[in-house]
Length: 141
Image (cartoon, rainbow, N blue to C red):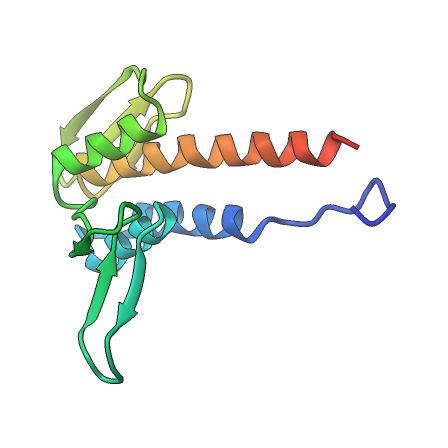
């Protein structure tokens, strides 16, 4: 805020997270590129040892390896949700050709699979936390 109370500066992390949730909603199935985007959001770092070399990933704890398969693996998606809200309450279901997930007061979200819908819910929880902290930071002062 540069002295103008009506000026709103969008946080690029919030915008990227919104775009990621929308991309998951449009996905037709598990996608490695979306898994990598979720991993980046979670603090994983991508690097190459030399030009043209295979990309490697480093977790926030420093472990080197492949990023989790958030959009494919139910256990990994549920862990993502647990990290977003350790006391989450909700459910998920399978429908013909898609899946749904509901968490707390969030709207029911649908994706290509229940796993993808769970990822969307986890990221929506993270987005809401970011928006709240951004709003409080903007009003402090």
